[in-house]
Amino acid sequence: MVPRHPTQGGRFSLPPNLVGREQALELCRAAGGDRVGAYDVENHAGTPVYVHANGRRVGSARTARRG
Image 1 (cartoon, rainbow, N blue to C red):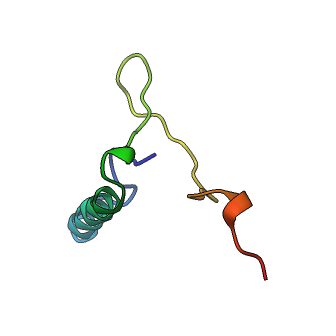
Image 2: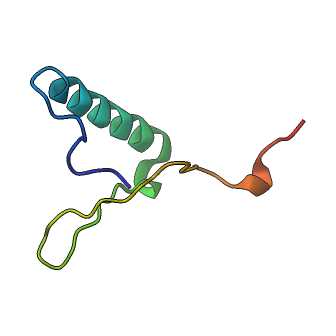
């Protein structure tokens, strides 16, 4: 899940947020190729829907090394 619009959109914070978002997506695509997808959520009217993503993880707990 990738937000369509950054939560911080001020004159000074929006440009670096957009650059960072694009760099992160490029890095993921470079590593994962066609296995990478970026999605946002919207309702039937096309309005973006907020999704709280605290604690999102990539990968599987089964493969995590625990020491």
